[in-house]
Image 1 (tube, rainbow, N blue to C red):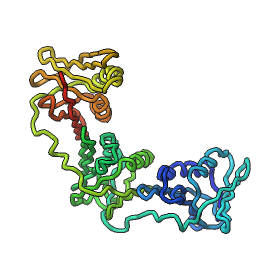
Image 2: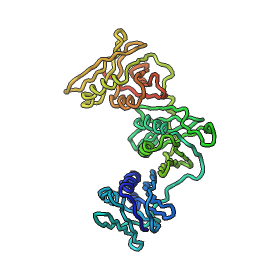
Image 3: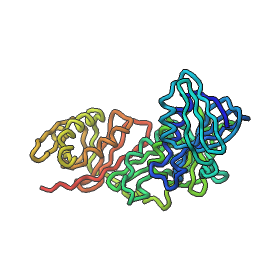
Image 4: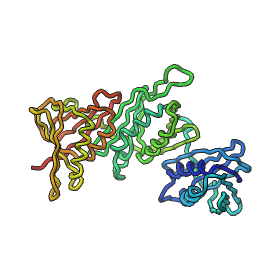
Length: 386
């Protein structure tokens, strides 16, 4: 293999695929990235794969001889990132020693690699369900729920986001047992190039690891929003394809909990208030709440149409703020983890929000008012001990 390519393009591609390289590989080759050069297409394909998440991209190059090699992601990536970008890089592979000679304007480096044959094949779906998805809506579905997934590996299924496709829509949901975020999207399927309408799909669900979906979210942020994302699923393997980039994810096994049964059918108390003002008050109160147990209390005053937001950080201090509201119901007091509230409120796309609840110990639901997005955020209150 011998080729010449741009330092900036190679560096960007390495930074991308290295996000799928394991920090604790179960096999030495999984600490490497795969480089495969094809003189016919004039492309160098780069792949990172930790057996759960795989990322592949391609760059253009002047290729004299085709070939493939795997190289240590960390060392090779750091060398490339520090080289000058004002002249091409020349890569030459010695097949006998499995060593790459890297020549730049400033000097020459040699990096020892491993055989490309030792690198596991990136699983690509050849059959199963195939969809074309709107990248902007898919990004919104991930961003609006990802934060609510669990970080506890013992709760394996809850460390992912559950995606349920039905008809033309998608319901994205995530819960860690203390909170639940749900976003419903009606038309996530992109229109076919050959048809005026999308083809509806039979209902199916899949749970994808949050760690992998964070990479999908970054991937979507670079996509052309006018071009659909190709989405394939078969036997627990999901593949996203856009232009020269491919992301493949292994789904989590098992049935996701029936989270819809957590949502109360009716509410006795409904509060409406300004989202930005509420967030600003919470962030100020959180300065003290974070010093103790993150607990804040919300007390309603139906006569004055205000809520009192307060915290008591033992041996440190106390604080409270008042916020005007529109209120239906009886006066009550309820407590929350302030971080849970802020996480959910910051993804709501609406100036006005609604808090619906029944009692200080039952689920409270936050939702936007006058918003195009059908978003629901349920938070379990913290029991107040007098």
